[in-house]
Image 1 (cartoon, rainbow, N blue to C red):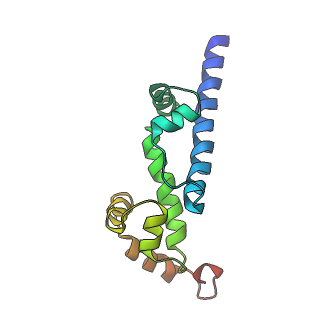
Image 2: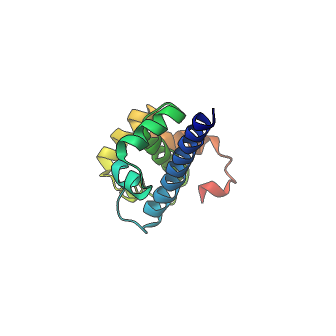
Length: 134
C-alpha cells in the first residue's frame, strides 16, 4: 500500500506543479514577460518529467489531456479580458499570441459564441456602475 500511496502523491504533485506552472506561464504571456506560449513538451521539461509522463499523469489525475486544461485556462483569461472594454478583441487576440481571426475561431470552438457576442452578452449582464466596464 505504501508504494501505491507514493505513486498517488507523486501523481498529484506532478499535476499540481503542472497547473501552478500553467497559471504562472499564462500570466507571464498576458503581462508580456514571455512572448509566446510554451508547448506541453516544453512545460514537461521545465517540470523535469517527460512529455509522456506528464500527459499520462494529468490524464490519470484529472481525466483529460494537458492541452485541454491549457486551452481552458486561456479561454478563462480571455473571458475576463472580454468582460472589460479597455482592450479591443484584436488586442486581446494579440496578447494571447493569436491572429484575430484564429482567436475568434478558437474562442468560438470552446464557447460556441464569437468573442464579440460574448462581450456584448457579458456587458449586458454587468450593472452599468460596475468597475469592469471602465
